[in-house]
Length: 154
Image (cartoon, rainbow, N blue to C red; front, side, top):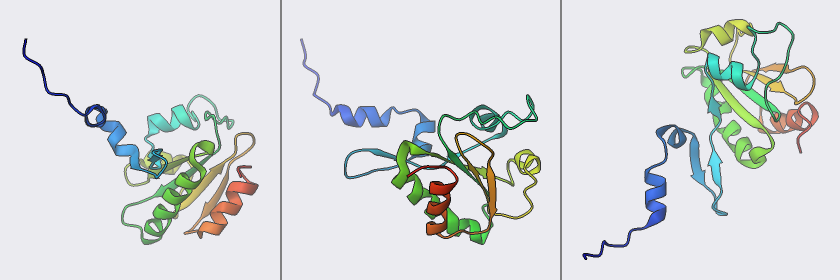
């Protein structure tokens, strides 16, 4: 019987990850923890993970942890300033909060539902209570303050 060569299993595991997982993995940190990118939402994933505005007019957060939603467009200069800050915050806070992105050019319905007229617009959603909207390219320290005070995440 012919012996097959031994192969590196870690290579096989990474190679056969579903394609959608490759889109959200940013990198692996020094502790071999996967760092996730902020997740892009569509109308359907928004209704599932954040708020089903068709089923109810009263705010009911569907998530299991606080969240930030970045309403942005690819052509927006201030949005490009905010993007790496949000990625850093996702890495720093890990699984304590979710950071989502909504491309207002692609997901016009979501922009209309929330009355987005300027970008970036950032929706801070605590686990309990009403969400709060902020507009403009916020500095990292302002994000950290909002995460602590609005989302109650430390």
